[in-house]
Length: 84
Image (cartoon, rainbow, N blue to C red; front, side):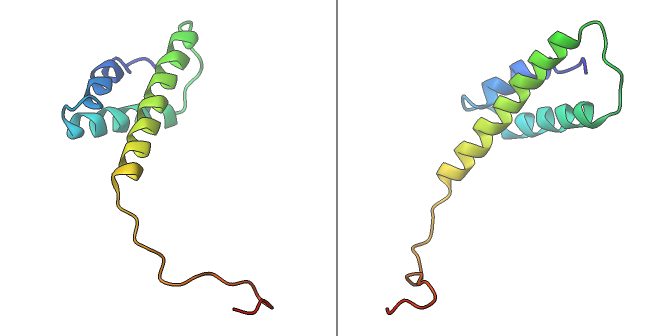
């Protein structure tokens, strides 16, 4: 899965750089990750690069989730058989 050198550049995206670069890096990562292939001699480095890319992806999702305002509930949920 070599070729994830872009992950280092995308990590800078989380510090305020291009969101497009982040998405391109994640796209490239996912293309490599989903491509059928046999392990190479550098499989450990590939796994470390995959970990960095997955952490980057998770941080992006968490940041996007925190930034999105949540609407107030429209009604209070009730359980069947409860009064109220």
